[in-house]
Image (cartoon, rainbow, N blue to C red; front, side):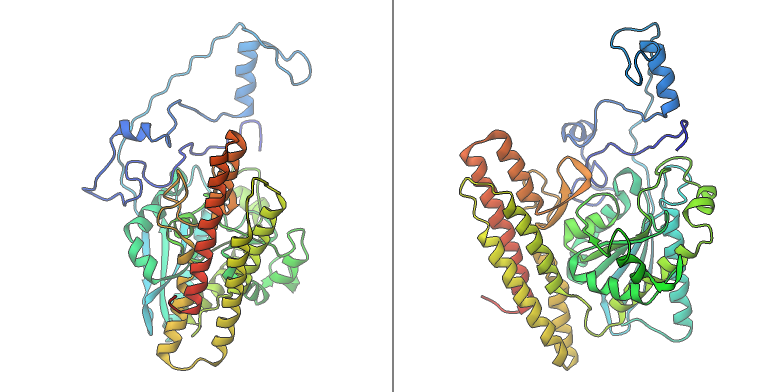
Length: 465
């Protein structure tokens, strides 16, 4: 980024409309007062403004003088005075999500949702317009299939979100408005945001979708190496086919996973890029650096579209809970390696994950011989609802909006993702206050996660205890 570049962003700590925490922001709804929003602690009370390095250098020189030694500025008053005036208004503004629906032929009450946001801080060639281009390409391909007589087994919903950059507002409010319907009917949510910022395929997902993503990547040619598939290049890269998780708050999957417990995935080409959230994220940068031939955009639409079609059309949902259990076991072993002491017992968590693995193996075998529409439907319901079982109605301690016991944001880093966020929060607190009661809360959080994982096992088994 040149010295004149500025990376902008929101400093609001919450998700959605701050005046409607936990319920949908619609005309005539209950709203918190401006004073109540300030007291919530989610909104920052000190005005802040990101500036460029070029402007910062001028300001620092006028206030403290020239650089004394290398890049170290002297401490003390300088000849200049900085006059910062803030002029802003607190308003309720209308936003608009755009929703398209292709109704399913056999299971219209089961939803496969594909989403992308369209608002940008500036020109937004990467964020979000590369994702918007991919979503529109998928919509166009689905339209062509329909013209040939195709109808999906399950309903496909295409969502273009508004006001994502402020606090994931468009998707969060839609999820809150439709929470009960989504909890009972959503099969999965597929997200595409910064679809293309460079070479190299990357994916993040809830673990039951891992194998499906890999299968789709095997079906599409790598746009940067036509002798290989995307999967071949992916596993041969420094990323080595690793699939990340969705505990952070960086895009619109957050509400689906962390509030309702909907299986989800997010895919892209490229990683971090130097013009992120700046005016230099424009078509010229994309054409010159991000995707000169725009082949990565086409490939991204192909992979994401294939995943969506499998979820919409496969008779039995392509979910793998053995993979889920394996991922949870890795996280539990990492927790065990911390050697927390204070009589902390990880064994309930280990046992519940082992039970989930067994349930995952059993339902995989059950898939092979199942016959009859009603039995298929019942099995699919178990596969779909197991992720919901990993949520807790009480949510995370002091962060009750976040219901998922396995994946959630780091408490002080929206871009950070944590496995077992409630346990992690409790450990951080116990290390700080160093009391017996605080370590007791760590054990309590371990039991909470263990119960959630056990509930997921029971859902997969389809039995009452």
